[in-house]
Image (cartoon, rainbow, N blue to C red; front, side, top):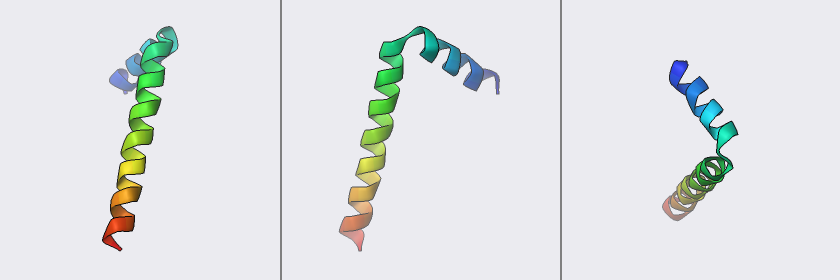
Length: 40
């Protein structure tokens, strides 16, 4: 829990980090969707 709170606090302080996290999650999510479509 402590690390999650720290991450949220640092994300609120740094908008750049927030953007990087969102972009990374979007790319990872898109990649998994792409893989699942290729597999089926």
